[in-house]
Image (cartoon, rainbow, N blue to C red; front, side, top):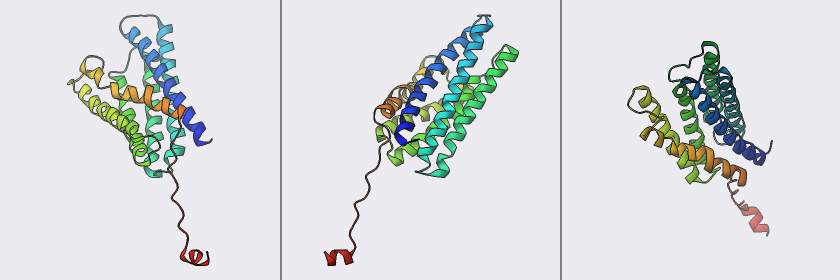
Length: 206
């Protein structure tokens, strides 16, 4: 697959993963809040699995581009995104079997999400595959995200309300607005190739 097709596909997958995650989370939360109907809850789990598949796809596709920047660091991106998918799916299966959610299930999913996002944007920043302000937005968003998760687990912050939700704004803008639109519209930036300098011998002949 060409870099242009990868960029478009990844951009679309970012929209898909965010939309399905939001819809799935809403249906699961309704079940937690007292809606005893299993059909909407099951649909929510399936939507979360679809979101996880999109996430894994993003990781695998981006690796094809990021490995040209730094293969060792780039490998962590698909690994973390597949881990995110695995954790999300395991929590969904547990919900279907036990009819109750894993305590702090979203926070366990968020851990590989945040770390993977930092890896992605570090490589985007140093490579200039996208404009650096986009990578900076991603670094800020995932940095706040990664910091908020342990604070939420410790009871210092609640990412579902108030100030905790504000922490999610930069990451949301990055994943659901700025990066996917840029990738679909512009694709990856190709750094200019250095101009070849003629050898002294050729210069003498000419």
